[in-house]
Image (cartoon, rainbow, N blue to C red; front, side, top):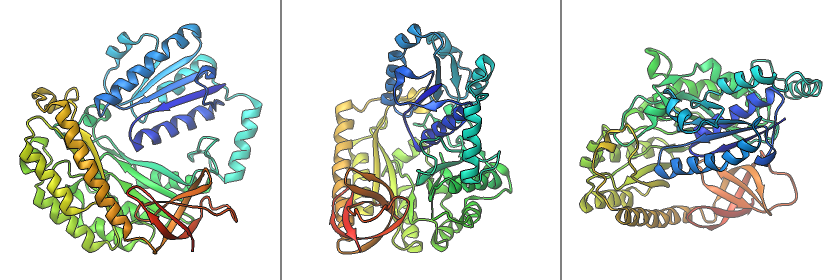
Length: 444
């Protein structure tokens, strides 16, 4: 019995797909890249942009002939295309889909497979393999078990810590598709990370739509700094990251935790979205350009050698040339390490979807490219400072003839060395070439 999962979108979707795979393998299914041979197919979708939604529909319709030729094939649709609301409209539109799964919840798929044929969980071979896995990795029944192809092989893993979002930014569909904030307990998160470390994982990235809102839905519950301190104590875990933050919740206590905990990496993703106060007001972001500028200064003052990433949207309804130039000027001034730049597209149910989308598509693309070109120059300049320096790299995999890994501040580094297996190890690399998106070096 085989399964195939197609994933589009953010790191949260990647984590969700990993958990679906884990649940399917508990039932005795095994992964396949060949969609034609799969007994279960899950499409995990994204709708944060219209292009992602169109891709999901295209992929879904491409599977309709396969489903019609093989009625026993179980086809599942998951993620933000389904959302947390009643999927009846989707069910009417796509009657050939067997199960519709909200983000982060494979329960209905598991229940369907169990009720239909009991999965493959009763097979003796599967039970033997499960026992061997538990013995090899010293896992307990409640632990999260990675899919077989990642077990003992995955170096860096994503761990959701808070689902949903309470901030209703006017452009963003996430609150409507993933629901309100729900924080996981520190104990549950720590248990999952323990299990991941026992299966060879060296680095975890803690995930949330607004990750520094962790615990705010629990009243006087723990906050992200408390979670970082708890996770930091897990033996054999070497690095901790978190994303994505919101400027309003980047507190002094959180910066202190990043600065003082050796395992927490010096990289912070904190989106600005726009460099003009009027655009920020229309976006309902809750801060000004000067607020963001001061925050970047505070981060750099408190966390030495920090790298900072941001998100920017160009072409919001009504965005003028002058307002866009404010965003360009801010990016030029702050010289951030990463900038994810997207063109506005109206999303259903959002406030901005009711406004006239009056920035022409070609102008949106011009603005996006202008920022992209500027960012390439900025990052090339930043990375040149590493020439001749020795950096600490956690090696993730071998890419053709080169090892590939990342520095603590999230710089991508390649190097060649056939003398040993570097996967999952820390390598000290002397940088002898830099570009805007990566660096190349030799073992120091």
